[in-house]
Length: 340
Image (cartoon, rainbow, N blue to C red; front, side, top):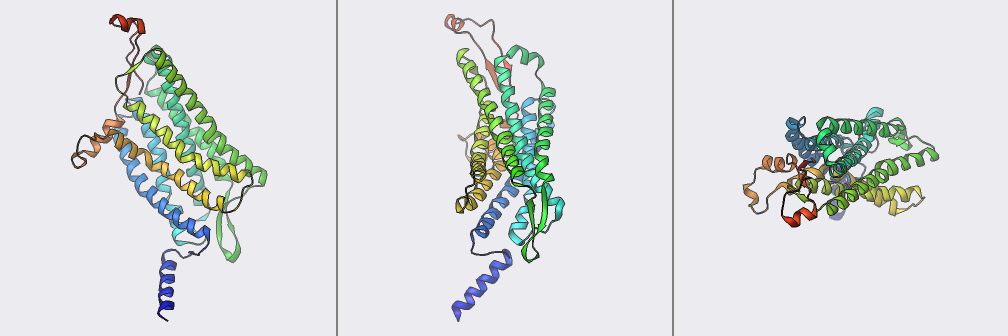
């Protein structure tokens, strides 16, 4: 009898906090996603809010701040919106929030993905242009151009995310339960998969790889030195982190597109999605640890100063011809070019 009472109490507690809790795989995945949604909502909202607060006053002055501001804004919108699926997975069996939030939740998710990767591609093009054409960049590159690139990224991201808004709907299923789902034929679903994969991953990362390849070749050829490596390192770490977080998600989508079924997809895809969502709260953590001076004790750091050190610092490249370096004389083509 005691065993039965204990089991009953355990079931009641589980039902109280997770009313749809079952022993099946999908319910376990829902609980895992509740944890990740909570982390993204809390850390992403606070962390990206701090980045926005720090970069906003300088946004009209430096290109660096414009890039960091818009990356943080995209991540902030996504992090705040995670409260909707968090509540749904934790407390409801169906979709209780109506058609608009069903569509908006999907739209914001892909807006964040597309906008982030488009801005990273724009940053890479900016870096490559600054290194390849330093004189042109010095005369023409400025905050207005970064603003134009950032706004273009938002517009393009909104356009590519629009199908995920239009084709979402709330459908009534068995036992009168509502479900937020995609209303598409099989061929149209394949088109959406390819849109995510090609526009949200393959093409932008091809641009990024080409740009950093150009930068590496030019810097080696010109024997460039860095006056400040931090902004370059920050962007590079952000790009690598984005790739590591989103690559598994696109890989599982590709497997699903190829017709792979079973627990490999039902378990792997939610976990890969959770990893991708964590990217929205990763950047502020990266800014913090890159800006933190580890020679000091952690108990004596100034949080705002650490973020400012990372977000507001510019990097300078100095190009010197090898022959002039051997003579020890200043180069006639010394370019002290701010690229951030």
